[in-house]
Structures are given as structure tokens and as C-alpha cells.
Image 1 (cartoon, rainbow, N blue to C red):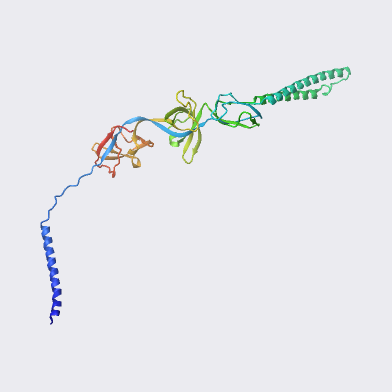
Image 2 (cartoon, one colour; image 1 turned 45 degrees about the horizontal axis):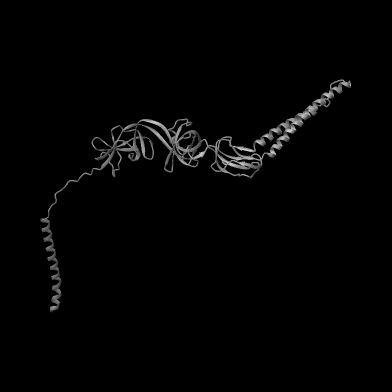
Length: 390
């Protein structure tokens, strides 16, 4: 056998021996490390106790306050038109946008010349009609005398007694007197006066112009009072008296840096439920003027807030809204410092608070802060206590 062939047979054996040697060394090292390993002392798990903020329960008497927003509108709005035509002789300086008039104050005057002439003509026609009646009565008397002189027997006819002629003359007198009254009314209508104390929204006339019959003069608003239409939900209405008429309402508004307040009264409800919002419009009228302040009455077009005072509840608990959990429950901390999940009865809730009428007692601690994973009976630690709801 040659040397080359002998070398080829020996190489695999050498590789195998080397692998076994490496494995043996590895096993020996591993056993040595395992025999010299240090065992760490076992430690118990630390229990996590969440910190919570609580509110001490205080029973109190609570009056429901309802708030709604609306826009100030005029109680009455009238378009003034002329009932007669004619040239404009005089226009009040107040007959312009923003002008004010008292009830019965003269706003505009038309030329009266033609209407005075018509009135005099109507009066002359009355005099003629009266004369005609006197003449017909005299003719009737003369006819009766002539009838007797002629010695005719029987009852004279109606023509002899001038009955149709008298009837016609009296009818002419009635028509003439009616024409006088019409002429007097037309003459009076040449002066247009304010039907009530008002503010002028817009005016369509000016000095030297001409007005036709039914021509537009101005649009006016009632100045002595305003109204606000306030929407109330059906739930809100249940906290108000059965008859809303004359219920007092505070009207608040922010005008620039001024906080203005007026007192109004409910005059009616519109009696129709808005299907989209389930609200009912309540009309509040403000007529009591303030002697102080810049605005005796709320200005037209101003958005205001109406505040209604509703039902008063006795011995209820007011909580911040965040204290009410899902399914109408609250979290409490009992005397042992454990969390308790309790069902409560809520009468009313708004944006900030809830009113609890059953399920809580004075002195108990209601949790107001969040807990990531609340479990009934878990240990909690109080970090802050408040006396009552804000």
C-alpha cells in the first residue's frame, strides 16, 4: 500500500478523534459551571395599591336649574302702509332706522288740500240732501191740501203724498252723510301716527316724495317689550310647574365686557314638539326695564341664556359627573380601605354634575379619580379627600 493511500485512511480517524475530544471538554466545563452556580434568594411579589381621590358624601337640598339659549326677537312687528295717496308734506326726523316713537306720535303727514276739498264737497251734498227732504215734505203737504180742495174721496195715493220722493231724498241724505264720514277718515289718514311705542327697523319714504295708496312707509318693532324663544327638552319640562305661564326666567347675556341680566316671564309654549331634538319652544317675554345699565331691555338679535328655577329635591347627593361609572354605579372606599362597586339611583345629570337620590349616605367616600383595572374588594389608598361636589 502506498503512502498516499495510507494518509487518506488516517485523516478521517483524526477528525473523529478531535470531535470527541472537543465534546468531552465541553461537557466537563458545563458540569463545572453547574456545580459552582450561585442561587439567588427568593423574594415575595409586592402588592400594587392604587392611590385614589375621594369625595365625602354630603346630603343637601338641591333645586334644579335649567338653562336654554335663544335669540331676542320683537313681540310685535308691523309694516306701516299708507291708506291714502298724496304728496309728502312732512316727515318726522325719527322716521329712519333706529328711530323711536311714542304711541300716537306723528310719523308722517301728506298734503291735505285735496282731502279738505272732498270733505267740503261731501258736506255740501249733505246740505243739498237735507234741503231736498224739506222740499219733498212741503210738496207732500201741498198735495194733500189740493186733494181735499178738489173734493176727491178716499185715500190719496203715494205719489200725491210724495212717499217715493221722500224715501229717495232720505236715502240721498244717508249717502251724503256717509261720504262726509269717509272724507273725514281720508283726511285723518293723511297723518300717519305710531300705533304703539316702537322702534323703526327701516323707512321707505322721505321729504318731498309721493305715496300711493298701500304704499310702504316703514317697518316698526314694539319697543316696550321683547321676547325670547327658548327650547326645553321634555325631561327639562318635567321639572317645571304644570302651568308654565308667568314662571319667572332670568335672561343673561355677555355684551362686550358687560354681564347683563334681565327678568322675564313665560307667556306661552308653542305646544309643538320638534321631532329632531325632542324639545318644546317656550316663549319668554321681557317687559320690565332696568333703570341701571346701558340696556334697559335686551337688544334685538342678541343671543341670550335663559335660566329656569325648577323642582327642589330634599336630602340628595350631588357628585361630579366623573364619579358616575358605567351601568349607573359609583366606586366607594369602605372602612377597611377596600373598593366597593355600588348601584345608585340618579335623578338628573348635566354636563358637570349628577344628582343621586338613592344609594349613598352621608360620610361615605366616593372615588372620583380613574382606576385602570378596578376590581370589587381590591385594596386602595386615599391620596386626597374633598368635602363636596363643586
